[in-house]
Image: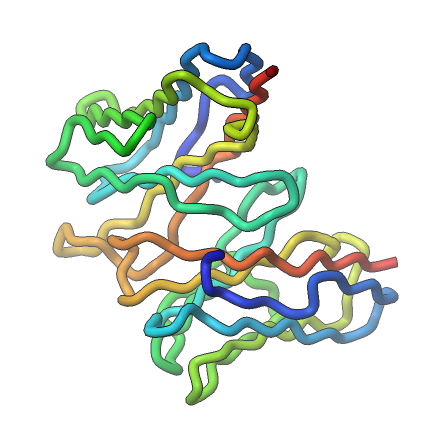
Length: 114
Length: 117
């Protein structure tokens, strides 16, 4: 058990809708990262937050947004959903804000857009 | 584009055999990390090797790093059916000062390892 909790585990929704994915990091970790995993694109880094502040941005679409709250949990909001947004969305956490320590991954949220 | 590329894409072996996976990357790195992913689950960190290290061991895992060739290998000895998973290498970006930048770990496409009992 990595200590990272993601909810929900599965999400099925229709095109055009908006969903929110939630992540609770491992106790003591201040950084939260969001990744998208699909068969054709592999694991794509979306965004990183550290202690409430955005630290790094990757291939995150404008339709997607994220935030990290004072209690350090994070939410990833996906709006105007398209079929191509169907993927596994992972949250990971680490102690620091640099990529020089291991990332601890949750078990992901599987999003299906129909 | 992916920073790390694993080779082979898929590997099928019998229990007890050794499994070797390779990773090549394109830019200078401060460290390289290996992760395992069981089907449909989150990634699990296996080992981190720093750029000034050439070899690192953890249990049945042995990782080598050759910065001159921009490559790394992961060796799993005496494999077990439970080792069946996808294995990814991941590299972080360097900051302008040569240290590790913020946490944008870039993952390769992975090697799918199947260990037959």
